[in-house]
Image (cartoon, rainbow, N blue to C red; front, side, top):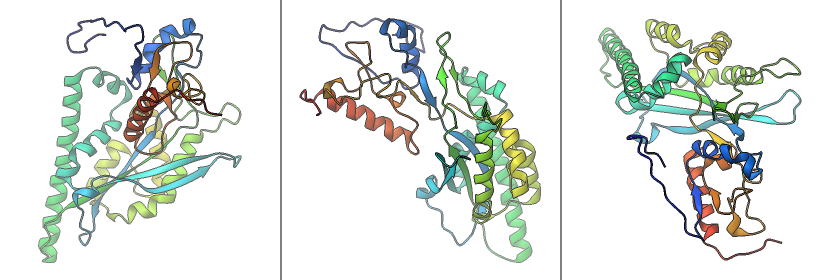
Amino acid sequence: MQYVDTGKTESFYLSEQGKLILSAGAATPRLLLPHQDRLQNPEIGKYVSDHILLPLGIYILDKEIDATSRDVYIPVFATILERSPEGQEGTVCCFDFFSGNLDRLIFIVSHLYLAFLPNCFKKIIVRIPWVFWIATNVIRWSIQGVNFMLALWLRLSNFLRRENRHKLDLVTALVKFNPAKEGCYSSNDSQIALCFFSEDENTSVNRDKEVAKRVIKEQMKLLNNLGKKPPLLIRFLIRCLTKIPYREEQVDKYVDVYSKKFLLSEQHLSGGCLFGKAIDTGLKDSQDTGKLYGATNVYVADLSSVPLPRISPQMTAYLIGFHVAKMLCSDRSTTK
């Protein structure tokens, strides 16, 4: 084991009956890949996926709606099943909503808007903590600047209309869905190759782009009814920096630009050591649940063992860990 902060390494040895349970998430397939040939387990590192996330517009919430702390994050407010051209399998697209005072939203929104940093810069900030800190705070300060301009606009509007409204709640949303193709880990450098927004070899159709464009257009009416659009100047600044659409005819450009420059990934990474592929399902022997094929005492109990869940990857990871631990402690049984 190597400590990330100091670089110090330390070795631990299992007893004869000991069991090693890996719960390292995306790091689990990386740890196992060098042993793939010796284990004769070619499924390690395959079937990797993540959500495609596209942040959507910021709106001013209707003054009649009272946004509480429970409304800060509302997942799966709207779900669409977008069927493939052949009509066989579909892509489930979920819309997540964030609403409330900016003080409650600032940390969530600022991290979402990291998506709009150029990809080359993202590769740097994820490796250097202080650069990441600077980037998130610059985005946070920028959003607070936009909030100041919105608050100033609100006070001016109130003065002109002789109204007494000082509350400024915001609402924003994102759409997320699974990519059409699964990715994999590279055996040479353990890098992850995700096939986001890739074209179909047979039809030259970019299915992920088509899905994103269609579902966002279908929900534009809902999005534009979330609240009032920000003033024209604010919308202009948002669109200059992000291309986020506020009208249906702006959607195609946004998806095209986002897929090339801003794609955010490795947020909810899953797969790489799937049940029934790289590890045992435990159907024949409950105490073999999660055991790595080819190994005698190595088990996997994290999100790399399942396909990408639709919602709550964190809770799914907890449940997997609980299930594997429970099976390891159970009496040996055979499922007929």
